[in-house]
Amino acid sequence: MKLPTLARIPVVVLLMSACSLAPLAQPSSSPAAPIATTPTATAAATVTPTVEVTRMSLPAADPPLGLLDAGDDPVEGRLGSYCWEGTCADAAGIPPKSQLPTLAADGGDLEFSLSDGTTFVRWRATYAAGANDEQTTLGEGGEGFDPDARPSPAPELLSSAAFDEPPRDDWIVFVQVFFEGGDLSYAWHVIVR
Image 1 (cartoon, rainbow, N blue to C red):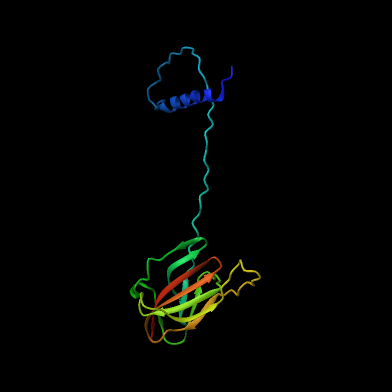
Image 2: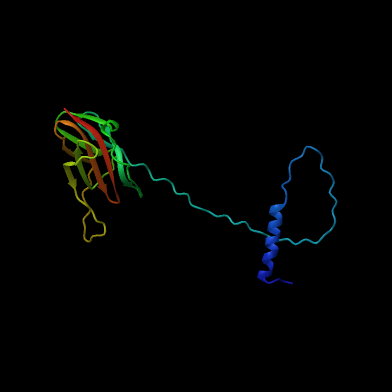
């Protein structure tokens, strides 16, 4: 006789409950005692375990290092707020000069690039006396790109940006680069002699 579907549910639940309450066998060093068996009628239920598969998302790659060069060795900048490969992060604020990488400059241009050669479509460089002071533009270039605009030629890809140093003094220099789908910002303590 076949039971209706709803009538079978309590039997399966009862069997599953009984199985989960049964004590686990513990290994023993003594010989097992004989077990008395009495023939009894048993109901068997087949339970198929459900395995839930979840896809683990890998963390996005770290943004490349921003390098600022005054003609000698490039100096790695302090990464600020950014959007990179689908991950965005806001910096807690601009640290004081003493906590920024220091670059000594003595006249001429500064040149910015990304350590892994990533290209960008637009950039902007500014400077300020302190973290909370008004910023003055040193230079900017490139063009914005709207992939949804029609027709829109692809913008020129830039691998570096060159701009004048700030006046002689002790400054924080900021560089922000933009590319399709994101932006990166960096800061340095620049001493211009």
